[in-house]
Length: 314
Image (tube, rainbow, N blue to C red; front, top):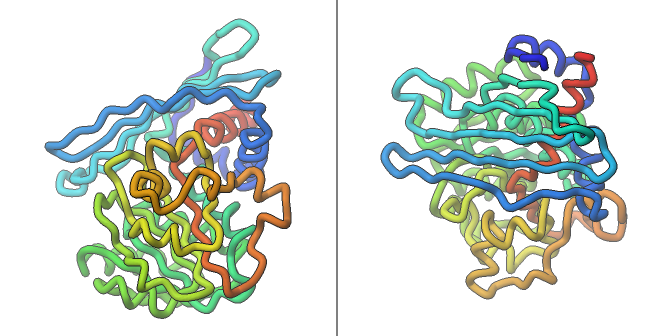
């Protein structure tokens, strides 16, 4: 059994095509080849935080994974990162623990950013005039970084809750080839961007339905518990396509959960990302469409990234 540190993991990730690995996982999932039990989670109120336990395997594969990931959103006040966690990789043959990946939440961040890039490949407008990012944390930076391969646009506007965090975001991203503007006003984003990513732990909508312009794509990645919500549920009703990473999972969490609970959409309105990847008819058909991708994070993503790291170790 091997123990792999965060430093080692970061070195290995440079040798992996994480976007390709995550895309394969979504296809396997939507083809019915993946076993993913319901998410285990603990929600904390004071201070606010959550812990997710996600686990699963691909049928007739060699491995299964158990992942523990936490997010405590006031950690910045203590000089600590918001996210932490680890992944455990086992063999399906004997149940033996092969590897402990002490990633401190980094692999979860990478597989989430890679999923955002997969979405962009199939749902982004052909011409993106400006990218909007909601959130100044790690995911807000990674989502933008991972979009570079699929969205040919350098104009970016970032929304945050404090100017201090926005200034820090801009400073940390200056090594990338983006022209970044910052704002405390959500409408500055929605009125100028046709590609938007939301990646916050918000429990109330950041974007209203009437703010979303024709031709806009939104990837929502922050709402991974029943309590969290970044989008007005009417946005999903307004959308021409609502794509989700897992239909079964969004019945209990994510943006789709809220829209379903309000009766604004039905389960039949949802399209799984793995099917979008395989079927061109399910992908964006025109630059006039409003599309939404609701990413709640599926264990097959954790499996794929853990397997890819293991493959470079052994």
